[in-house]
Length: 248
Image (cartoon, rainbow, N blue to C red; front, side, top):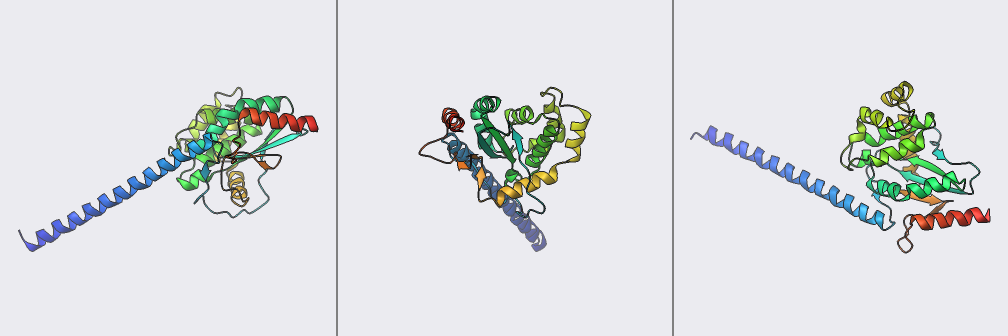
C-alpha cells in the first residue's frame, strides 16, 4: 500500500473517531437532560419547583411589563400568580393536580389567577414550542377562551424534549376541542405570531423577577410551591384560599 493510501485511511479513521466522540457527547447530553427532567418531575410531586431557567435567551425587556392573563373576578380576595411554561413537565403535573380546585375557587369568586407564561424551555432545549403555545394561548384569550384552551394544551402536553408545539397547525387543531375557538381570527393570530413579542416580554419579566424555575406559584405574594416541609396540595390550597376569603 502506498504512503498516500495509508495517509488517506488514517485520516478517515481520525474522522470516524471524531464522529464517534461527537455522538457519545451528544448521548451524554441527552442522558443529562433526561435525568434532569426526571428529577424535576420527582421534585414537582413533592411540591418543589421544577424546571430551572438556564440558558433561556436574553433577559432584556424593552417596553412595559407584559400583563398576565387573568382568570376570575377582579374582586376575589385571593390572587394566585402562576408562572409556567407549556413545555414544562413539572408545570403539567401542577396543572393536572390542581386544575379542578383552581376552577372550583375561581368559579366561586374566591380566587383570581394571574397566568405569567414563560418560554424558558425554548432556550434550555432549543425550539419554538413554548413561544408558539404562549402566543396561541393569548390568541384564545382575545376571544375569551383562554382557560379551556390552556387546559387543553396541558392535557395534550408533549414530552419535554419533543418540540411538538412548534407546529402551529397542531395548536390550531387543538383549538377544535374548545367550543367556538377554531375560527379564522384565531387561526390567523396563531399563524402570524401576533403575540410573540408579548410572550418574549413575559419571559423576560420572569427572568428579571428573581424567580428561577417553573412552576412558580404565589398566593397573595407568598411562594407556596417550593416548601418541602409543607408541600402544597389541592386541599391546602383550598384551605388557604377559604381562610383568605373568610377574613376579607
